[in-house]
Length: 131
Image 1: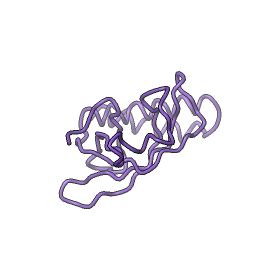
Image 2: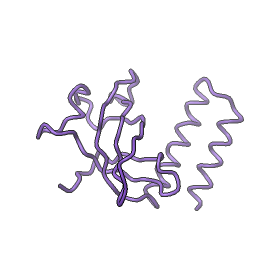
Image 3: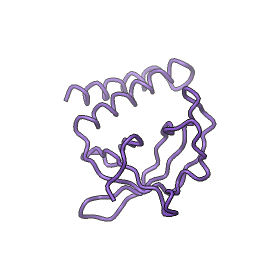
Image 4: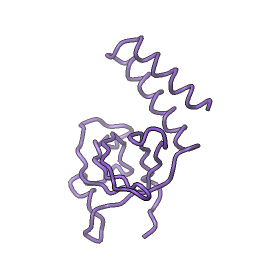
């Protein structure tokens, strides 16, 4: 609960401080970190299929930030679309081919989903999904 309260507090700070400049970027990063911590502690594990990856032109420590279009698997229901920005796991990853697995099929990655806000998804590039 403390993580959720921190994320809500960070959201209120961002809305009061405006939406431009480095200060906003830092506040947005804090909000994203708090959302990720919440998902790590209470998110539901599932998988998602990567539909497309688009380079945003932004780099973090030499790695591309991509806009990732996903179809998230919903246990007992139909997959639903989510769009997230995420730092790609490998600086040398070719984004034009990253949505396709080595098998030639669409890439599937593990994700954590907020049960109360299913559009809040954390990509777990560092894990391999079960077949």
